[in-house]
Image: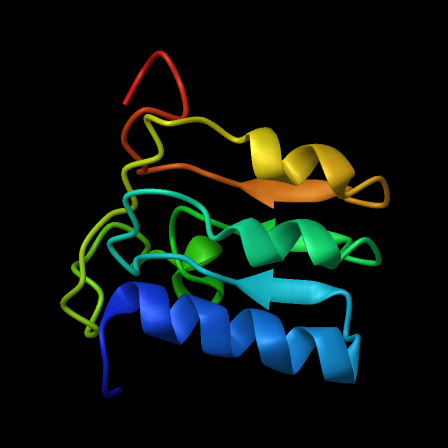
Length: 102
């Protein structure tokens, strides 16, 4: 995976805007803030911000992810998600700042 976490997040958001799968994995990209572009994905139903999708359900969930970017630090908040009216599932475990119990 080349590039920094923010660049990868923006590429994934751009791809989801076209493909409209309803799912987006931004887990473990080491983001300091959510990219504002995420608010354009009003069709989104599932979003991973904590553990990456492939790790979220397995017994290996707490191992270090291969990307090497680390946990997302969402201390600035989740305000960009306010536009995602169809969002049904938000995975934000193992993030910093997103919840009281990190």
